[in-house]
Image (cartoon, rainbow, N blue to C red; front, side, top):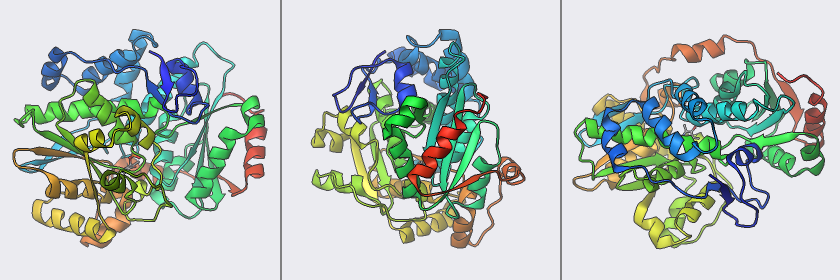
Length: 440
Ligand SMILES: *Cc1c(COP(=O)(O)O)cnc(C)c1O
């Protein structure tokens, strides 16, 4: 399968090129040229299939021409080696718990798949060293660092704002060592992102080293997220939910997650409609209402992984619907909640149902309580474990949130990070001098 750019001004490329490059040269995002339709028989069999089984069939449909079939099956099954249960919260509302992976957030799925795929593409190219640059405000850095730990021919630079990520989050990418380099930037998340963007545009750096991105602009990061939409649907049908009336609600920031769901639907998954739930950073909600897309600076909220003022995957949403506003509104509805509303939802849901939401999942759950129509069943994506936002959640509910063991294990490690100013020449120098070190 070839990949084309949403901007339409650069040549089609192979899967390998799309993964290694990240962004297309015309600054567009890569999209598969086609969305192979999965058979009705496959959809019927879903409730009887395990997550790794269905994931490898979906992966085969998308990537089967580009990756050796046995290898693809193995790497898909390895990616999906943790459960993603669908948990009933009320009669018509279910939580898809995406936090049972190594770093307790949904980004584990895409990061683990991308890491293994890059490792596969590097197998015949022992000289190649791919440098993954990732700016993080928390969750992306931990998922990417853990996904890529020990992968041959790949080195990861995680840039994070000094003093602005929680100790739990910081420990998840600063204690690993090996091929993971943590850079503590004296600045904000926006500064980190600006350094990474500038690096991708710097001719000298790009001539001397291979740079790629591991956020959801990369096709190998966002496409595999499709797997769990199928698994969610399968579990709902198995639980006796009306298969024609499943609505999926996605707490959204950069819109990579929901885009994977929209593509799952295009490939044949019978999701009735989608809800994109926003916090105060509600640029998409505004777009649905007005038809105008007006990016703006992000504001800080208690659902901070969704604090995005210019969602990078908006280009993919437009592309999927030929920029037709009516078509987009027919398939996706939107909503927006303030911090007070999010907190009230965390508190009341725990009191009324016993279910502990994290602030991101709370945005999704609340949207279902307001937007579901009679006869519909809603699934919201519970995108991270509440313990990742322990202080926030405990302050809201007054109840302790236990930290899972695998999170505690990170916190016991020793922090290794390099401090740099928020200054491009310093960053560039560091990248270039790391050039001479050995391939891991
Ligand atoms: C990244 C993230 C999101 C937003 O996902 P997008 O794909 O960027 O829309 C939501 N919740 C959590 C916990 C996240 O880490």
